Length: 432
Image (cartoon, rainbow, N blue to C red; front, side, top):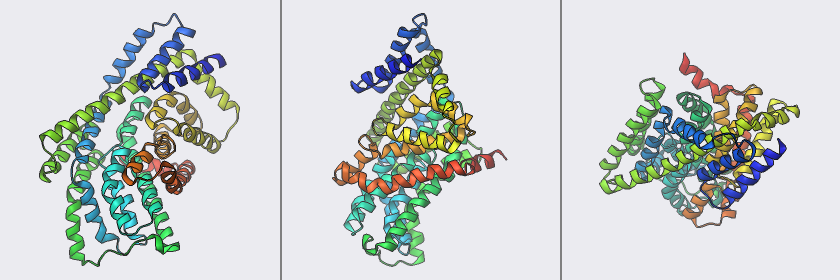
């Protein structure tokens, strides 16, 4: 079995390191490993079966719709609306406008399942404005990088859809499980920003001009379209009115209405958004096919049972197992993209976590948070690259600015491990 494991790792490193597409690399790895150790297995037939199983999954239908919704919203005036709508309400809060990245990303994440899209949409307005107003550069960059990852945790989340399909778990329950952890993680970010403002007031720029309560209410008009979209998408799912797929379809229509009403979206922009959504969906679909094929192949070889037996032999407590998995995923996140990490490791790690007493819903939130950490882990962290393009700073500087928020996420992982009720509270309420 050791020979199978080393051969698998070597083939995967060789193929993925060569620059081959991740999906094709996973398919090729599965085919080669079966030919080497189970030549009697008809891998072409197995690949065809897994491709059909993945692509015909009804739960996966929500994925392209949520991706399209994010692409359409990216082409609207939402980012400017977030800044103008939130600014009057933050004048007296410790940290003032430094909180705008966290609040803006939290709101936008509620209608966008992409971390990168959340970071770009919010950051293209807030980063420049905050720096121009004298806010500390590290605080601006770090808060944007950390809060941008909330696009994966707060529903709707493309990563959660992929996890739900692979783990055969309810996507709606996964979405609901991400709400409270997402809000608490955003609150932790804001707490850190407020603490920094109290300890080092020079990191915070001048307060915006005073506004009356009526002017604050008028500012909320800018947030009205986004808040309505959040209500229809998340509220319809939580209220049992719509399935994730139906809510995604309504979200696409709502985002188009916003774009056309703001005169920021035309038919050419809609065509561009549709084309980009189709490309992203095809890429994700290929990765999922490769992952399911590879996981089936190594399952036939008995590798997951072997690795699980080795780790169980270490006699780790549940918290120690979570610590080991956290380090494992952080190391993977330094060299691999988050989605690839999930699809490649889930067949091995999910049984381990279930044996330790955690359920699949909890592990879904855990793995989303560690994928968020991968988004801001050098050198591959995609959010780091996005912010580098927005600010012009080096990857090293962006990484250093992001480190406090990375550590907050690591601490939050242990918080939900000690208190798993944080994850299960909202899904359990939904059952009643």
